[in-house]
Image (cartoon, rainbow, N blue to C red; front, side, top):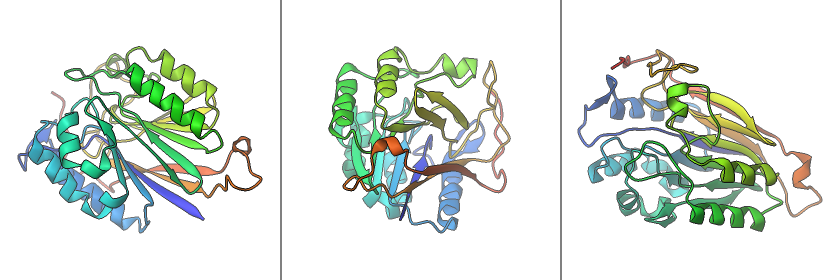
Length: 273
């Protein structure tokens, strides 16, 4: 049996209906993207939102996101980005935000796989950091489930994506996280947001990916910030059922695939500042 996981990221929703980022009305763009999700015809076992749900960090913005995601909330897991407010996020999306106001995280089993989300948010900063307590929790979870192939979700990527301006706003002090991922061989994938572009790299045995924004896209491999004319989208994971109760071991590299799905065209062209 195949388990399907949907990843959305960088929604940047405002309380004000028509408010825009780089000329893109983010609420309207998100509505289009969610319609595309429905058109896939897939029944998603889990939905992960990897940060920047809002742009203005207002309670009403989170309520709008909750309303738009209503049909998936019973299987949805959320971690914050640099544009989020942990307390408000937990206040509105109560059942989707495990952890505390000091760190939101999740760890769930699905189809023999484990999905783990960590918090890289630093209040008032664009760059991220994995706090010592969050890293300790992650290490504990990985040690508790060594036989389950794992996808790790975070907002900030743990390695550079090749865009100098974005890498300068990335994860601060990433080495402890990188070392943990490299020695935790069950981590098959690290999938992140933040950069508003599609990227694929490696960290030890793990594939590191990023997901498009549901709104504004940035051109990859640029030294400075430039918007891309490519359509917004989302990432889909297809995970083959992995029976950890049988003779299989994590060393057998259970099958998984992932793809980015984008809208057919650009409804709301972005503009450079």
